[in-house]
Length: 581
Image (cartoon, rainbow, N blue to C red; front, side, top):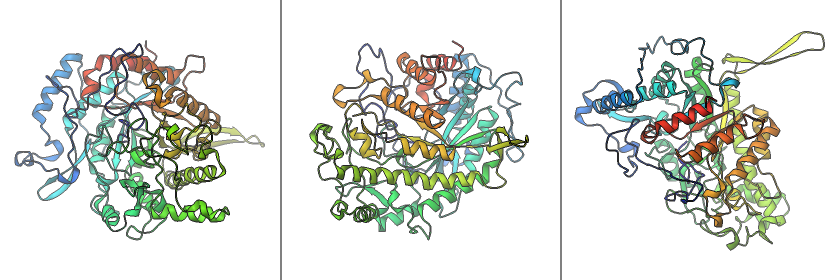
């Protein structure tokens, strides 16, 4: 869930705010990441670039006990300020983490309806900071902790009182399995989930098999596990590679999905073992606290290729991006597929006329609308192969996740019933924890025929072809939820030369999900608090017609200083999403 190339992957390009036209009166963006709650005299400053491997605590901090060694005195001042400003009286119950039984009855009156009921509007979840769980060195050992724990605790209760349904948090591969293969440390996440439950909130846990820190908007650096990086030092083809030979170390290439090169395991097996360990550890919270496991499938946790890597300066909006198919595993697969198709010459490399990261669509021979190579038999072959690999990648990992959630003995809840021909009733049950995945909102060049940026990202979606069809079919078969970004964006906020249309793209996804019966959730790509953004999110959720509730839920990016500095505006938004205004 780390930020993709556009401050979460799919919004306005970095460094650019929407033009001050009629569309937007004001838009505040703050990359400050100094804590959870607002501070007096807050000023914008550069995002933290601390690496997880380099972080250490001071001698003074090391004398504190437990994961509260993160400036608690300052946190207390923040807490009192927040309570005074909002005139709230929050009682935080003490919990016994070893005997904790998940229940919302202690924090929520029995007569109060759940905010997920149809009459209560569209539930809102809030993303927690990327570094909510961190690793520090104490007494010569590296342990995982919750950062600014007291501030976090107050923030969670504040969110609950405001009407937030739950939170989304990254469960980082690089933190949990840092010590070695199959050595899992979920201790800090256990503590976090109990605090979330004590606040009466729910959790969407993202299995984050990517690194944080390489994208604009990332406030920390969390690499892949060290033992995985060591394999990459010897075999760099485990990473996505562009035509210039640049390796993207944010996540593993899908080309090696089934290669047993990681201590005898394949990447798919590693992901499956990680998810299985997580479910074994927390299945007692399923259905009450943990409501969804979102499986990371690529950069920023999204199902896509890293075709627009803005964080290292190679790409700038609205460039078409580049195909990421030049590691030895993907090239070998391309060669086999081309030979099987009777055109071995098509398997030598990727397209030679696709331009570079920052090309415009009309500047390339491949993506130009009229007569472009994308519409030739070769173009169809290559794009079908490229996008097909992405769908197969999702199928392998999501199928493994579904099997884990559906194992005998896992918690299950009632889904539906039907009457058999002999008059007996047949009851159907489903996992108590929903399976989900994230899809990138690549909206630039959507108004062109070729949809160049979507093609390099792995979505074979053009004006004449629905590239999201196979993804929806897979999600339908696995009964999984789709989370899609850019729900706050409007076409008029983007420069015309980018041929952007986030509104048309979102409408396309909504209609496609509805056709397949896939539950759809939305996320904002940029952290915005202006009325236009909130209006667009509400419109995306409810629509202007009688067909209300087009989104099952909305996840808001992200809890932090900026949210609490704009608390009044955010509270009004929550009330609207709960149909109270």
